[in-house]
Length: 238
Image (cartoon, rainbow, N blue to C red; front, side, top):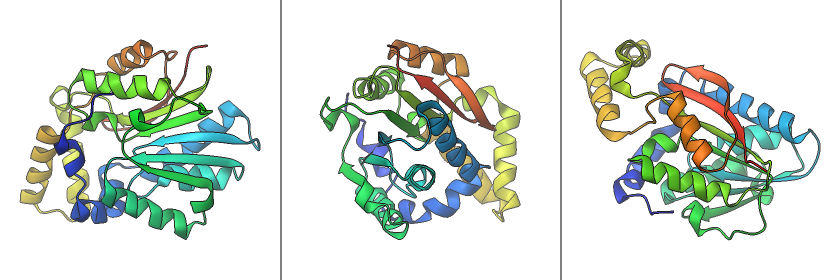
């Protein structure tokens, strides 16, 4: 894939990474539920209590995908990829805390840096796509993930999936969510300005489906929604 521009990685410097656990749960109402349901959807698709190798793209921060899925499926092992060292360091601390280091291989870098074989039984791409500017970068990462999955393997894709300006009520409610947790009006305005300038989500669920289809996945099945955020599962076409 094309290497994302430096600014998409520099967002997650040490200071930003340290805030992640608290801020992510404010920004995404239902953060834990989304990750728990993602684990359940993978287990329901692959079948419970059987070995699997799972690719976790953008695993830095809380490594919540691995924490939830590893607790549900003790025979699953993970390859965790992230281009930000501070975020990956946070993930390693969480994995150590939950005794998941022995089941996880961590890689600093990008999906395209991984070998094409052996292929994975499943993958997650949570909170990543809307940080990649432009459709080409989004297609690149989805193609890179697809190339490393077995035929029929499921992908969990989660992130913002509406153009922010197209949904002013959702954007206003997102600001109110921050106010609910103590943000002053000027801080809310700053956060709204930052998200409008610093992220580039797909413009609709139909566009997400198109990106997935172009990368070789079947139509997505949406299972979680929270304001702009949505989570879906799609299988790589056989």
